[in-house]
Length: 253
Image 1: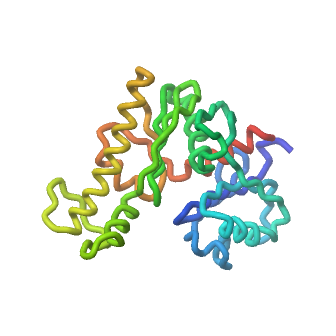
Image 2: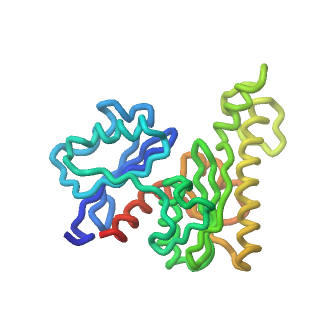
């Protein structure tokens, strides 16, 4: 069966949300999401029509074994084996230079694969930003060499950490202000400044390393908070990991 006729169910299980989509080899037929805490519930894949044809199931899971087992149970009815990806030494034109290739999160790897696949339309180095519970900022050259990246708490996790680790600082979100004048806004603005600063520094490092202007491609629920504060263009793809999973299936078929 050719890639064009395969119907692929791709699942991106993150710490906060699980995104999934059904792909026919050329485009998405259906996409949906649910809270990771609901992975074991009847609502998890309720938008997947009964009797739909699924030929392959590919999963990126960074939410742990309990969620992995819940996804297996929820999709058992389809009668299709699940493939849980791990990061590879080399795949889809991307070379992994992590100290231990398999220690790189599968979501980061899939995002790098997707970014490199899109690179042919925008040649040059890529800065790949995943802004969710954690913020990851990864660097990949035009040739597909993954140089490395940083992990910092995302904006919501920063606020939560301050709330848990102090006696009086609140955890609720405030508004961004350049010069905040109340505590809620000071915390939220500080989190945005810290996260956007990490992205900017990695952008500068990648530009210096390659001698070229990077293209920033980003995903995750928090990227819409950060993008307006970055001094360079950002291409937002809310399904970057899912796109990478499809590329991995294409390369293996």
